[in-house]
Image 1 (tube, rainbow, N blue to C red):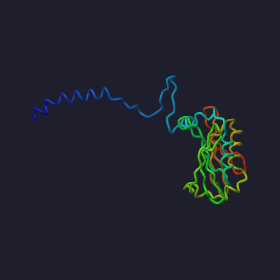
Image 2 (image 1 turned 30 degrees about the vertical axis):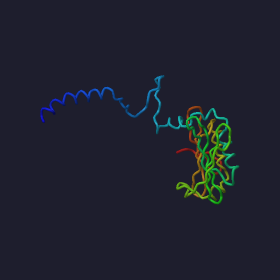
Image 3 (image 1 turned 90 degrees about the vertical axis):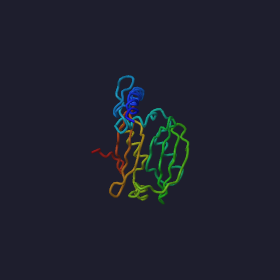
Image 4 (image 1 turned 180 degrees about the vertical axis):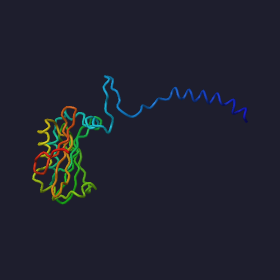
Length: 196
């Protein structure tokens, strides 16, 4: 038995070396260098949002126009909006909350402005603290807050969401200026809230 083990040892050693030389190495996580030599931020860094919204500057429909389309499909106000680039298929995903608590998710084509699909959803867990009355009673709508944020930053809005603030609401909007993103908070009164 020891003779078999002894004669197999060189074979196993050579096989292991060959496998080590031919198997691809996995690079350590972190910034990756592009062909031009610049460093590309990895997922989870500030650069991720910029890559996520790639193509936004070239679409024909603005987030404000998509919000108009979504809100025209039924009674209610938009409470959440995101620009999505799914392998070149660019659209806005907009959630509209009606006064009776029904949540409808609309996908709006970012170039044609057409509704791609609409789905009804139960109120999701993160909306539990947000009451339909809070949204309906806010003097500033999400669409108005988007316009305010775009004017302040001088860019195109890519994301917008509503959150409860004491007995009212406020809006968080991500605006892209070129390849940079800026988060702007707008109060229910339509005024910019300074970031902490």
